[in-house]
Amino acid sequence: MSILKNRFQYKKYTIDKKLCYFKPHATKIEKSFSEEIIFGLSLKNKMVQPKFFYDIQGSDLFDKICALSEYYLTRTEIEILNNIREELTITLDSGYRLVELGSGSATKTRIILDVLNKIQSKIEYFPIDISEILTESSEILLDSYSNLYITGIIDTYEGGLRFIEEYDDKKNLIIFLGSSLGNFAEDDAIHFLKQINMTMKRSDLFLIGLDLVKDKKILDKAYDDSQGITSQFNLNVLQRINDDLGGNFDLNKFEHHAFYNQELQRIEMYLKSKSDQLVHISKTNTDVKFNKNELIHTEYSHKYTVPQIKKMMNQCNFKINNMWFDSNQYYCVLLVSKF
Ligand SMILES: C[S@@+](CC[C@H](N)C(=O)[O-])C[C@H]1O[C@@H](n2cnc3c(N)ncnc32)[C@H](O)[C@@H]1O
Image 1: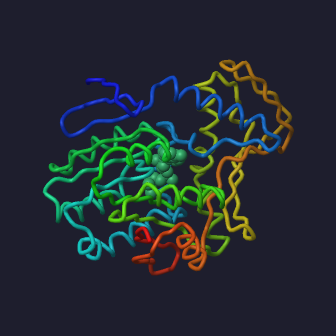
Image 2: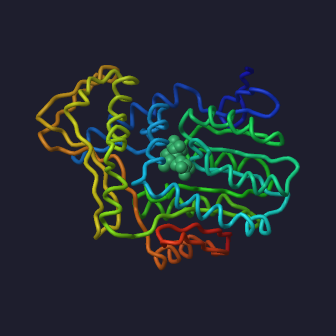
């Protein structure tokens, strides 16, 4: 493995001629993790950002969530993507590079890669993900596509977008699946969509999957499953703080708490302290006090109506080229371009 320093303040890891990664320096990653965790736990309403769920263990647990019968999102988005293969084949051409925000285990990516495979002799794929799972999923993809060339960016969405913007002038198809936009608070989602819009060139396309408002019972079950996998996923962030920052969180003293807030159209996910307790984080020499029933906010997952989606896209200077739904109207996938 060769390691080169590049102009984007990333380290470049070249695995072979078909695979390389760019990653910020380790000290930058560790510093931002410890600073953001300590800041979030010092607030009156404690919080941990959802991007910190995804260490290797968290990414594996997320894949298990995707396979749960209660978690309709993954299979529904796959249903839509499978149904639009033909239309995408007609819309895309040999000039598009695939850029994916939050690629994870890159399962749905295969549907888009299959489409590109029909029209391109060489496929270029730039996955962007904060999780190291990107390295594993990239190697697995390369086994399936002999004409695939991967440049991974192991960083935040924002870092990855800046990287893409500065990289070159090639046309991009940017995809953002799993309704991950819903994890942003309302204003932040608008800000982030505008940032994507500003990164895009006129010829670029943006494919985004969004979860729709639906029956509360279906939503509650999707984020609090009967096997307790979502609970493990949520609690794992405390284990990560223990492992990476020398915390002494007792995971048995916290519980998963998730529900659909109908008024605000969002799943709210928390970790609830089961007792009064004091947690010590040794690497930062910090003590964090919890009262019984005190909450740590860990995730939102906003749900949208079709008029809200149209308004949001318009507000962010996106023209909707296509909008597709599943048979239950649970979910939608949009293909948009810059106005
Ligand atoms: C909900 S999963 C979705 C994975 C996949 N796209 C899907 O649809 O199943 C979110 C993915 O985005 C990554 N992620 C979450 N927050 C991120 C952030 N702020 N910057 C970069 N990647 C992030 C996670 O590591 C994870 O792989």
